[in-house]
Length: 597
Image (cartoon, rainbow, N blue to C red):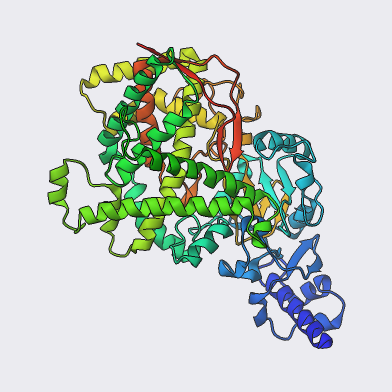
């Protein structure tokens, strides 16, 4: 039996070798290729390479010397147990003799000058723990302040850093050069592979839930994305909900007035109010309902809504711990895993109940003119999706759940950072208020519209400058199905690539006065132009960019307009930085003073 297994391994290696070198090559003579690059042992010559497409072996070609590793490819940190579910393993972890670079093939001399992934610098790793000993409590780095740790990695190792973190995980590459980030996104294809989180996948499959956009891959993801995208990513997709979201912002103003009058114009931990405002605004657009989260008097749903907000916080905190830590949860239920699953289930049940309530209210979504007339409100987003004949109810429920989970905390944190920067930069706040006042003077109408919002250039500049300094999404991950050259290194397919936009956006190399809040740099005739467009990507990029971008931008703009138009905002405490809990949040409670204008 042992001899049989050895023969199988040898044949498998033979098959992989020819498959790896079967692409177009500048060496036309195949005999010469075999003579120079195949191992000398005659038993390596393959008779049949058909089995190579199902190979799990790893090939590294460093200076065209072939090294085999029999270790299976397991992405434990990202929860990928079987890469064959997503793309052919025959293309994983190999370097062909012809690495595609634009439209041309690299010459042999050029290929020999490139370094392999084994040469990429990075922190030392040990079996089982990876680089965990570099993080607290053992080392100097704080996993909740990754932007600081990653700046140190960039300064020590350069624009491309290799790091291994988690049980049996493969090497991940941290990208600090926007040119490399651009290359990755330009080669991701129409169905980009972003690693799924196995805890969510397992839970949803166990309960027969739809996996949702965040976890699906390949053609299944593409089909669902196209169905939802045409309803959400159009430039004017969020425009019908402006009036609803503006009314929600008006309710926030009333709540601020009421609260500050009882607290000497000061509101402590203001992000709590922003979370309630974000939830109310999202539900009004998604479901066409008002929950009463911002009501001054009795709140019938206050307990349930507070639990919903708390559960969204728990989701991010626990998922982050599960992703970066040693995955004991794969062996036994850990406290973080239990908290994550319980919070996810409660959120799903609440979203399911309110979604079905909306659908029952309009029994026939294909003919909802009567119900719309009665309510005198635009058709909710859920009803728009319900019109899609090919969208299953399970997909709809999971979509609403994912939008709720991601939207509440990200929008609230983004608003908190915007208000903080405006509060400590009074001249910027005054410029924005001047633009708002002038806009309302010209418009002379009670409600804003999409065209007016797009015309407010300084408002957009404030939001983008805040996203540069404090992006609420730390970054994304891509796994390419083809080799790529990054910063002079040959990177095989199948390697997790993580753009570090939060670091790039703060580097003096790319931004003049990088540590200052200067919205003017984003204006058409700004004083600081010429920076790389891939340095700041607050909503991601490409086919897998944030699906709720239009709604989030509109909600944030309307909230800022209402607050700055009504109050002079100030902050007098210690400076605020960021903490990472899957999303990026303020590192301390934000206490703001509101003085009515």
